[in-house]
Amino acid sequence: SRVRKIANMDSSPPSDKKRIGARAHFKMAPWSDCVDVWWNKGIECYVAPVSEEIVEFVFGWDHDVVKPQGKGKSSGLESGLFSFFPELEKKVEGVEKLSPLRSYGPLPTGSKGPIQGQVILVGDSCLFFDPITGEGLSLSFEQSKLLAENIFSLGHASGVQSYISKIVNIKTNYLRVTSLALVFTYFPWVRRVALWILSFCPSIFNHMLEVNMGRRKIWQFSRSRLLKTQ
Image (cartoon, rainbow, N blue to C red):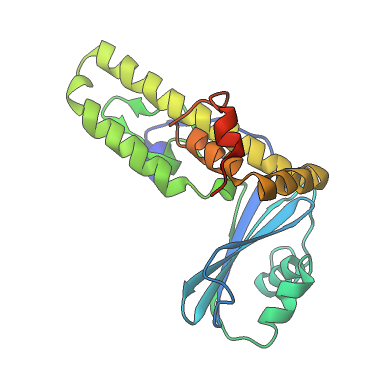
């Protein structure tokens, strides 16, 4: 965020992990109408159908754990990333690429707070941990809605403090759930056990989504919901 830097609102990121992100688009028909998530230790790939003839591949990895080949070279980095997922590597072999591989990192960024003087930060400019939960836009919308509801009270110190505390609650929930999701990347055995459990109890996954959106507390899970499947 250029505004965050100009306003001198940069601060320590929420994590010291050197997570990197990269993405590229290929001209090919999607094999699914859902987003596929592929995992390897320290790295994951999200395969998203963009249209009937475009598929996006997004990689996220910890540079301290995974060392893709060809560092600094787009083509070398791309082949290095796909080498962790042989099945995906075969799917894109010989396929036309519609956009060059673009990478960014380290991903975590932080700010001194959501508001300073007449500058108000919303979304990723306020705080960014990791895209693994795919909720960047949702957080921006939630914070924007909160800002709209409190905009007239920000002229008073009490209103500012109330707004900041509400933003902190949103950020705390986001950090907690994102940290939990990253466990799946760093500990494959935890991921296998968790996905096995979710395959039998999808209501647990629904509950975690509601927790992530702030609609429920993590302990507010009744036995009836546990037995319910959808």
